[in-house]
Length: 544
Image (cartoon, rainbow, N blue to C red; front, side, top):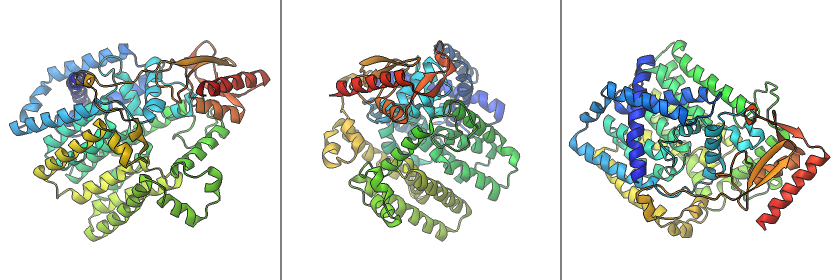
């Protein structure tokens, strides 16, 4: 906890300093210290995304960034912004920060932490953005901008990767500063995302902030659209947000298209980044084929697509069974999955229906546009992969809009206090959720409270792996474990080795002397097939 607190103080100052520099260049996104922090996040993320094409985000990139941010913070006397808080709000901020830091100090338990988040950050800090990295491990082709941002601060400022915890503190500052207390109602649920560098948390926070700014009359379409596109680059399932800002600029603010150019530039950078790492403009969709030599093998993409369909039905049906569903069975079986996923799916559809009726009753243009944006996003999600984690933000938005005027300061603090105790109790005594909600699989990986959390957050170490070679690629595979979160690079998850072998291909270095030149896939010859089979057999024997 102490470590996170010290890191939070440093990061808030650095980000605010960078935000001030951004304000001088592009204008002010949101007034106040929280607005400067958000601008700082945007600015650093974009700068580092460009830099990571050419060099890894090592401490030699981080230290100058910290020094420049701190210089700007003290030169512009940004600490004086905090004097605007009343004494009561200082106490509230302190109480909220304590709960947030405590929640963020627990062991990570989200499986993507080990199979996607940490490996991505390791690659960016050690090598930067690598051309065709998706050929090595398809998941790495995402390279979220949020992970680029986190990677840059992981050498010194945030070595335990608790930037999400720091962001929650920033979110509480925004709520206090703007006196929009309903945001405190979301903090307890968001605590569940604070132990890992999950991109889900920032996109939910940023979307609620942008939504709040639009509702309260912020007309800076240039930066609102730019920031909404930035949120999309973190997680493309947030497509509803730039759609909303675009519709507002068109039908409410009557803005000209010049104010969308900055956002368009950020979107272009996102497409270039994806084409560099994945081979197509939007991960994991094979749309927009430019014929790049490092794009993934079609058979591997097909396997990935099939897996997404299996995840839609929570792995409760085989792919062959799903293919035989009628339209009625597609819908019915999705609604009536075993466990908590069924409840979430039903609530999702009911929420959309209720919100659509609410929008019709209110007959307010902004609420109608929000509803249209959410429906567009929901249709796309249902079409591609209707997994609950892709539409969880819809619940937040609907609750925010429908209850915006109901939750005053007193009600919000009561909700925050009660549910924070509930959430902290769950992650402190995970046997409760394991017993009563066994279908909530992440609960099975919660550990509980340890006294070491008082001075530094809990982290896992494994460091067990084997070395292999197929063709010109030497790589590492975690021993008797499906994920490569602390396996030395280059590493491959066992599941992707199997997928490649089924497709008759294997990743290879473009230049066997330089990993930074990237990866391509190559059809295996007879010798390489034997090498791959040896790897698979050894992994299977180790697992046994």
